[in-house]
Image (cartoon, rainbow, N blue to C red):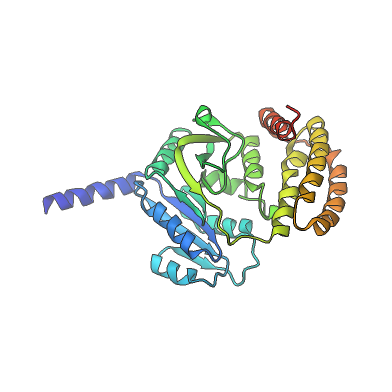
Length: 303
């Protein structure tokens, strides 16, 4: 009996000595994926966790599952909200000092990953976010471990809530894609970093229940240039806008909605050319601009 009390006292001390982490998930009609995601959170060795789920009006039993889970839960009135809107809502409902954002079809792999991430954040107050090692989703490797990287993959990442609130979280005009880079650049401009931890491992196998091809293609194209136009110096901005333009045409020709996509793209790209000549008073750190410029040249075979 004494051993039970000692163990309970130990668990209580651990709970009181560790900051609360809010695990925030936006979901829509993926209850089986969501269940696996939540189970991976519950298997973590970290003792102080809350789960926050915003449901984009699912019809597959997600509501019943969440009611049985006992998490902080909000169900949208309809399914028209974007992922940026539902995630920002989840962040606003969170109570934790740290925010662990997860896609509903992602999972934490090693049960100490959250402990490793929080410990690093506690020791490094200038760090805004931890980029997880997500094979097939991130391009960082062992050499990047504990180093600054341009952005995290939003499938799984840990963020410091106080800084996220100061930055007003994700830009909801981006709809999908590109939101992580936009947020991380705004943090870097304020002096806060994103660090990659190679031993914080997650998996992300994208669900078959996904967005329409047209919407996905449209925002892939649109948001690929967002950070370049908003945060890059004019020389790189001009070069990259033209290179992206050629790449976009090639991309469009290999989609299943060529005509519809091209009609939208031509007007949007002309608008982007006018935005390209504006002067950005606030810019991303030069090393981030160089990183994405070199990556683009490699992508198109110019390096």
